[in-house]
Image 1 (tube, one colour):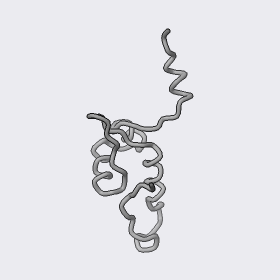
Image 2 (image 1 turned 180 degrees about the vertical axis):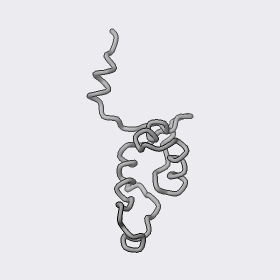
Image 3 (image 1 turned 90 degrees about the vertical axis):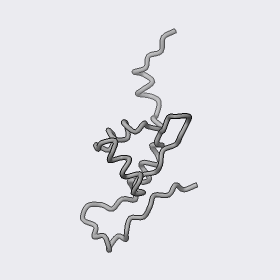
Length: 86
């Protein structure tokens, strides 16, 4: 039986994304995503074998910690390194 992947794509929530998909979702280049990870603005990916995947909920949580446009650096505090809540 052949599966209809278009139905699956619309009904199954995405839990993780590849580097390329994170870059597309953030409208930046893959190198920019890697730089954000290096700077602590985004979480490090999860690893399964040679695959690296970013959890969508962790990306969302990290973005929620970024300052909003117009915030003065001293006013909202320095953005810290993103840390997963366990």
